[in-house]
Amino acid sequence: MIGILGERLAAAAQQRSAAGLVRRLRLSDNAAPGRIQLDGRELIDFASNDYLGLARDPRVIAALRRGAQAEGVGARASHLLGGHRTVHAELEQALASWMGRERALLFSSGWAAAVGAIAGLLRKGDCCVQDKFNHACLLDAATLSGAKLLRYPHADLRGCATQLRAARRKTQAEDGILLVSDSVFSMDGDVADVAALQQAAQQSKAWTMIDEAHALGVIGPGGAGAAAGVPVDVVMATLGKAIGGSGAVIAGSAALIEHLVHQARSFVFSTAVSPALASAMQTAVGLARDENWRRERLQTLRLRLCKQLKQIGLEVSSTTPIVPIVLGSAGRATALASSLESMGIYAPAIRPPTVAPGTSRLRLSLSADHSEADIDRLCGALEQCLAQLGPPEIPLSQPPDLP
Ligand SMILES: *Cc1c(COP(=O)(O)O)cnc(C)c1O
Image 1 (cartoon, rainbow, N blue to C red):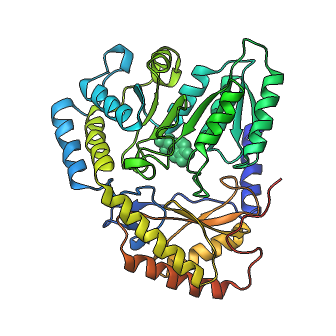
Image 2: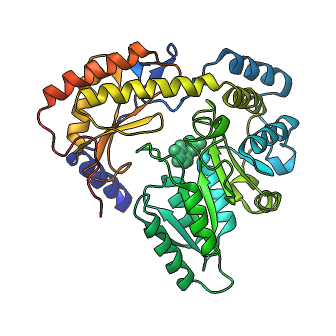
């Protein structure tokens, strides 16, 4: 390959391959609920974020079809230049009311929402305090904003308070501090103590932002998320996970949203969300809010899974549909994932850089689309595959202490 950049590509490819971190884009085809079709084979899908089973709900599909007929597929413009439709405003209203905030603003993805909100709020001189396990988009957004990024060890409230005090010392009177945390952590499935974070932030006169990507629709009263009822300043959620579509939302005070309408560059300079999709998301939000049986079903499946995992020697204590099985090296996680796949189960290995080195894992995610029999098949296969894999490198399922 020619030139410095060409050489860089070749060196990076070489490194990936040596470290066992090559990823492959696999083609998947539509399949029955709870299933995924990969390379022509149907597998039980334990990797989807469609926790409530809404992505293929007939009522959501019908709403998309109706929306496309009535409103067209594309918005044809950004929200500020003629692309903001009634269906967008209605969806924003529904989300704001569900999440218990004054107003909400739509973005085309969670990534765009994170970047728009954090870089729209913070500037050079400010500080952004974040949990080390926060989603990549939150960390990148802080970097882009020009603020100083201070991270604390995962879920460590004292570490958080220490960094908030450090942020106070590092900033001038006119500089802002924003504490940012996932509520449900995407690769560990644990839940942040949102009320305690908010109080710690308030003591340092900082604002709090909570990313409810894996929480909206899944936990909290009526699925309203982990931050429901807590006076956090900025709440973010994606429509791409439990809501079963795509797009995202920032919710908060009217003043915050008004500010972001002007200052969130990923909102201002981006095509409005598809009105057909907004119409489907309106229906999906209604179902996610009202159909409690979907959350109850997830609960039942999770309890069944945890009980059976315990019987095969895997202690897990997840309270969410995300159940990680930490294995150690990338090679070990990949080996387990591929033997599960040969038994009809899709639970891909999660490796660095998504998780810290030495904590490669299977991330099992449950969906209301799964049956009890699916869980039983998963656990039966896991028991068999783990036996083939040989003795563990680390105590199974407990992430080692990280630096
Ligand atoms: C998936 C995810 C996002 C990104 O949302 P998209 O809509 O997929 O861009 C943001 N934060 C967390 C915690 C996530 O898991």
